[in-house]
Length: 575
Ligand SMILES: Cc1cc2nc3c(=O)[nH]c(=O)nc-3n(C[C@H](O)[C@H](O)[C@H](O)COP(=O)(O)OP(=O)(O)OC[C@H]3O[C@@H](n4cnc5c(N)ncnc54)[C@H](O)[C@@H]3O)c2cc1C
Image 1 (cartoon, rainbow, N blue to C red):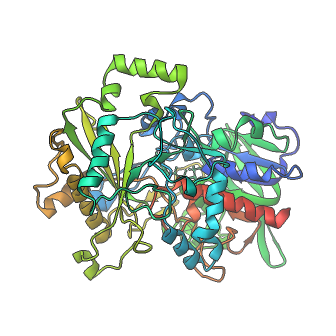
Image 2: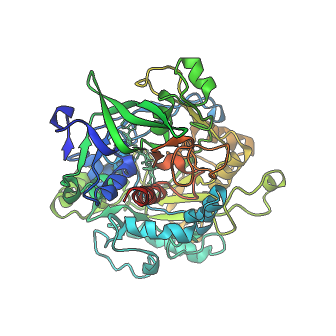
Image 3: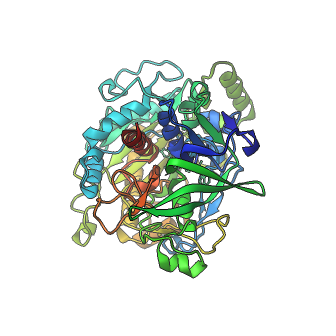
C-alpha cells in the first residue's frame, strides 16, 4: 500500500492516525509507529512522506555504497547550515534523507544504544522513570533482530549474546567481511595498550568503554532500514495502512479549542502543484526528524511568537522551545598511509577488484560490499584531571559513559593509495544551535545553525580525540605497517591544531533536541515525556527531535526506541 499519487488513495483522506515523515521512526521513526499501530486492524493509518521510495535504490541496499550518500543526491533534502563561526565561518552540508525509511535508508548503519547512564539521565531530566535504561531495554529488544554476519564467521568473543535480542524487526550484525590484517592490529593494540584501549566485548551492553567490534543494522549482506524492516512486504500489505510518497506536509490546519485545549485535525500537504488536507480522527504524529519536525511546527504557528511574527506566520501557540536546544556531535577524520594493501581502498580504487566485489555481492550477498567502512569502535573518556574541568562541568552522563568515539576503518584516505583512518566524534557536545524559519513559505528550507564548536569543551574534546587516535595507530603492532599520517596532527602547537580543526571539522549528522522532552510541568521543552506536544491535544512527536541531548552514541538506535515507545504510548491511549 505504498502509493505514488494521491489519486491512488481511495476514500476521503480521513484516517485515525496521520503520520508525517516516512522515515524509520516516522521517517526512521514514522514507519515504526505505522507498523505498530496497524497491528490493530481497527486503526487506519496514513503516512505522508515527502521523498521517494527506497525500493531498487542500490546505494541504499549495498552497505558499502552508503558512501555515495555523503554528497548531495536526489534522496536528500540537501540542506546547508548557516556560516558556522566555530569552524571559520564555513557553510556545511547538512544531510537529511528524503526517502522512505528516512535517514535509516542512507545512514552509516552503526548500531549503538548509548549507555545505562545516558538513559537514566533522560529519565532524571524528564522526571519520568519510563525513559530509564531498564525500562527502555525491552524497546531495544523489540527493535533488534540479532543476525549472523554475511560471511557466517565464528563470532565467539566478538559480542555478548546475553545483551541482544533475536526477535525484533531491524537486523543487527557484526561485520560480514574480514579485513584480516587490520583486524589483527586492532585487537593487538588492545593487548599492547590495555590502559587506554582495553578490549570491550560488546559496545551495546550499556557500559561500552574500550574497543570492540562494530555492530551494524545489516542483515544478509544488505542494509536493514525501517523501510526494509518495518515496512517489509507483509506489513505494507496491511489493509489499514496507506503510505503516500512525494507528499510534502506544509502545516497543520483546522485548529479548534475544546475543553480549554487546542487541537488540530488536518494535515495540509502538497503533491506536485496540488494541495490536499488529510484528516486525523485520533492523533497526528509528527515524525519528520530533527530538522523537519520544528519546521512543520513553526509553519503551523507553533513556536516562538517573536520568530513567527518576524516572518508573518500567525502564532497559534507560543511555544518558545521549538527549534531551540539543537545539538549535534562535532566530527574530524584523520588518516594514515599504510604499506599493506588489504584495505577498502584496494576495492574502491581498482576497477577490476570493484567489479569482482560487485559480482560477488550480486551472486551471494557476501564480500567486501557487505560492510560499511568501520570495523571497530573505541569509546573513550577524557582524563579526569584534564585542565578543562577546572572551569567546565563533566558533560558525560556518568563515570561509565564515554566522551570520545573513534571509529576505526581499514581505508579512507581519499587519495590514491592504502590508508587506515579514525573518525573522531565529540559525544557530549556543550554547544547548542537552532532550527528557525526566515520566510512564511513552508517549502523554503529552514535555517540550520548548529552552533558547532562554539564551546571550548567541544574543541578540547576533539583535540584529545585526535591525540588518542595518534596514540592508537602508534602502538607497537602498527610500527611496520604505518607509513605516516596524511596530515601531521602531532607535531603542531595547540593553536595550529585548533586551526586545522576549525578548517576541516564536520558534524556527525546526529541532530537531536529541536522538540525536546521535558517534565510535564516544565515551562521549557516541546513535548511531555509521553511525547504529546505541550498545550495541544492529539499531536505527538515521535522522532529524534524529542531527545533533549545526544546520547553518547549515534542516534538511530535511540530513535528506534523513541518510536517503539511512542507507538506503545499511542496504543495505550486508544486501544
Ligand atoms: C548521512 C547520515 C549518516 C548517519 N549515520 C548514522 C549511523 O551510522 N548510526 C546511527 O545510529 N545514526 C546515524 N545517523 C543518524 C540517524 O540516522 C538519525 O538520527 C535517525 O535516523 C533520525 O530518525 P528520524 O525518524 O528522527 O528522522 P529521519 O530519519 O530524518 O526521518 C524524517 C522523515 O520525514 C520526512 N519529512 C521531513 N519533512 C517532511 C515534510 N514536511 N513532509 C513529509 N515528510 C517529511 C523526511 O523525508 C524523512 O523521510 C546518520 C544520519 C545521516 C544523515
